[in-house]
Image 1 (tube, rainbow, N blue to C red):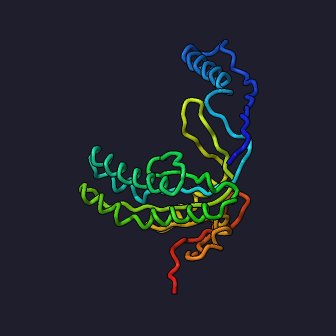
Image 2: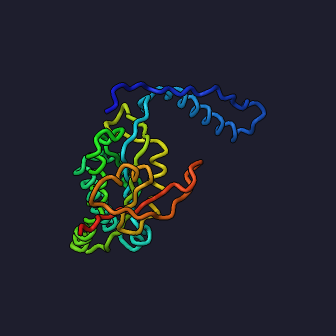
Image 3: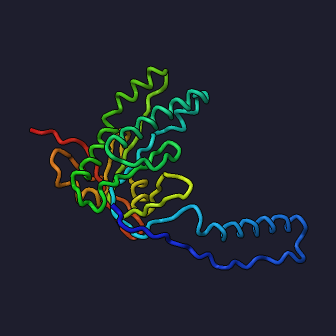
Length: 242
């Protein structure tokens, strides 16, 4: 767990504002609005959001629905809401069952991380994060049986997970956390590599997870992540025991 936290303050440099002299009246109105917004930004620098001063490494995951726009286009609003409700709540409950903190849903995606995996000191918790991903995939049939009971079309989704540095953010007006860092961006990018109703892991998580028995990892096409070329990605499945 993070022992000490400090608030990072961001100093916004002074921004020279355009003089309102010789500016058409309509443009003056817009300029006054901009000046007001900048004043609010300066006042809010030490406001609602604070970041812990130290990055720590965690396992995290993203589950994302497949073809949701096309599927929901023909659903009336109430049925569309029910469709998302079943899917989002199902995924969130599975994540929490395995000790994850559900950060937020972004459209039809859910972002979560596992606090107990901090710096991989407890390898059992890392294995638990793999079990979470597999449980989401293995729940596909049950979730779609529930969809059918409500007369809704079946849902498909992709699960991606990785391990790496995260910065935890807290809000003064909410108990909810948020997470930031390159690991979040990488996890989002590798999600699209997964086949529907399957799960993938990034190379950094694989380096820890490959020691665990009972799992199969199959190398997929890597991709460029900033200055890191060909970041490896692996599909995850249960290994059949002979």
